[in-house]
Image (cartoon, rainbow over all chains, first blue to last red; front, side):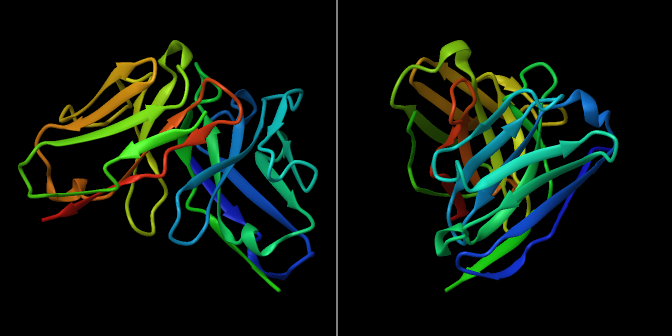
Length: 120
Length: 107
């Protein structure tokens, strides 16, 4: 069974930093691209970032480019998202999500998310 | 690519047919359009990919259609567990984008 478990969320002041982690199990981690997607309270979904299997292809949406950094450790079956220069509008549930095998940009499984609250 | 979903809310009874629309601001190549279902407090679940292919384990009452800029998700007969929010997403271009969602609520 595919499992993605996020951690590292919490309350942080505006301008602060956090590092989110996602522990994966139930599949061959190194064979799949991975994503971070967020959802502000009561709002829709926003794709943030993608990292390929060997980390040689990385992509961000404009609103987080230069502030957030995605990375992965295939030896630890883990995905990370470093969040810097946080703003109030970054308050959201952050989901780790797996890219499908045949079409890497398609998301086929999601974790349950971790809540990040940015307070000014 | 901006995805616009309609209606914002659909009020229906169990057993009725639900038709949800997703319109793209430009043509989506290869019909790289997916539909997800999200229930309160849960992660989204993939229902449909490539505009019309059902994901593993998805009941056949869910179907997707469309191409280019206009896509539709149909639930042929609503079951109680189908009342949820549905999102479309395009994964053909970066940034990948989602629609704003359609809530299917019990009438």
